[in-house]
Image (cartoon, rainbow, N blue to C red; front, side):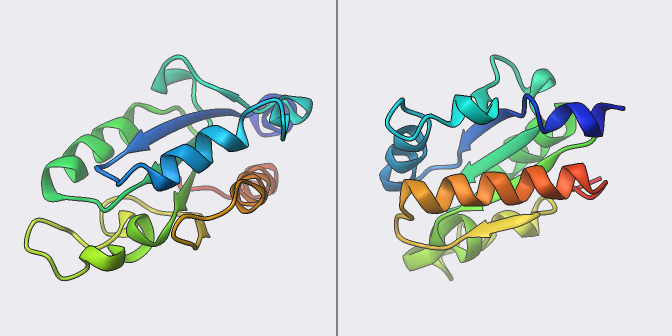
Length: 142
């Protein structure tokens, strides 16, 4: 039943694992009235326990990886994860650095990758829509 409801009101949880803020600015730009994702019901969740889609930005460090896993575990099922930007996907320019685990998919399952440094708001919205589609089809990170 919840899968059918997600398409009407997917709530986002945004987690910055230590980014340069380029991707964070683009994520915030994507949820402004200019792009108006609320027309699709997309809103930021006030709490991870209400979230449907986790958006991860930044290079995932070992310490941030622990917090990311805890946040992911707090979200109800079904849920989807969107890795935004080169750093969240592979570590970006910081890949190979000693404190990194290299990408969000090394810590939690990732459903949608949005490449770029930083990606455009349109690409982020497209990634969110792909995550919604996965959830509707019964997929997701569970």
